[in-house]
Image 1 (cartoon, rainbow, N blue to C red):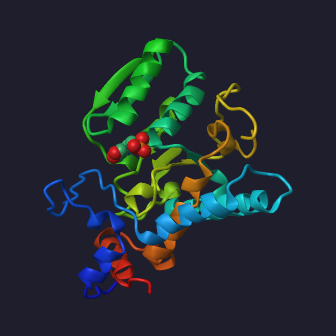
Image 2: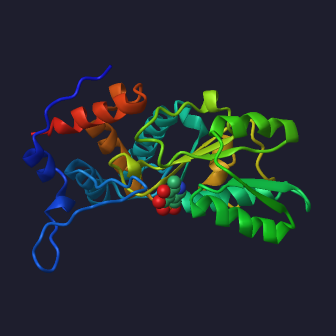
Length: 276
Ligand SMILES: Cc1ncc(COP(=O)(O)O)c(C=O)c1O
């Protein structure tokens, strides 16, 4: 059980530059974002700026900046693996969740036949519904919209019909520990932007999920391991430099193991320790 630490609100506010913003009439801005989008601390701003100034480059080359970029992407894959309690090799990055979703459904969709069914829930974000509706129209698939059901209950049913279970954990990530094995889904989507990081798409992809033989990708995205197939080409390297700083700010080693209200308390306690 995490213990709460008294918040030094002034110091905490100072660490989130966006909170210094005022309206045109000079009053403080209140951020009230229901989908859990967080503002970023200064360390995340600095990490992304540092990447652009000192390391900006392509990947898999021989120069220092290129090797540093490879290392940064590798470190972010490890952090993303921790976030979903999965192997870093099963993590794909994308520009944002919607773009990754399009990439996933295009790859999976090519393996579906007219008359096959897509089931979405009525509480899903539009990124998870409209993308599949476009696929359904293109491929002659049937769409069913069901009432909210626990993700694990849907994932339990999926294998019986040869279905693929895709879970959107974007809003869940700051509140609950994500365990992809316990959920037993095939793809899980989340984003560091709900955990002090920048906009970026993260997809955990079950290694046994066989995507389309013709994924939408070009070099330098590879074919192996399988998650590479959902990365269409060069990644947004400066955005990938942000999550590590967010992870450090959250005190991730401890935070990652917490669930429910403990997760929120732990995150608050950690971010309340404003770095000097
Ligand atoms: C639950 C949920 N899923 C998906 C998305 C789409 O994410 P993105 O803006 O990264 O495309 C959002 C955005 O608010 C969201 O709240």
